[in-house]
Image (cartoon, rainbow over all chains, first blue to last red; front, side):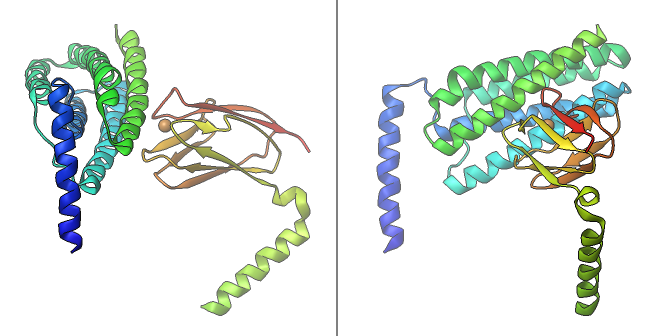
Length: 175
Length: 108
Ligand SMILES: [Cu+2]
């Protein structure tokens, strides 16, 4: 009884969503948005773990620790929300291209060491947070239809703006 | 076990009563929400204790600019510092340096 009722509701929502995405083809769905945000966080955690393996600079290591701590917390929150909303995260062009670029960058950074690595890692953190924050502001937050997802993305943006600022200060110190 | 807990409670209450207001001090709370100390600026008296409560889902710290104290505030956790000297103590979050606060401690 309950199952068939909610099944009907879900089907209605799906149809409504399909109509919306058909009329605005470039607007990502909540499932895609959640996945893009998660992937971006995961990329930054991996970059930070590389920095923790390679860097001996105390400020760079402290920054990397911050990235692991914050992005892990935000992603855990995102996973919990996705589960609660019963949304299946969906791979898409944006997330695929983020992953591809990040793999190239990681390979590049892996070849560096010492001060050269520190500078390249921190510079990339400035660029990466700039890109992700831009996407959040212009596309992901405005496109999100679920209020909780929108609110999580807004908090995420606030955290990541702080990261960008922190990375910029660190870059000034290293250059 | 129960007896011991009750005994402790009595001892603490007696000490507070015996010492009076000045030594016990007040507990002044600062909430951390949406990556901000709220309120960011507070005034307390010598002997008071400031308690930070982290309502965010990410970890923060309350770290004195002068290095005098450094409190790690896990998610959903509180941390306290008692102030026994007058002065103005600026602090920040070591994880999010954009987050800053200030505590004015006056002599009583
Ligand atoms: Cu913080």
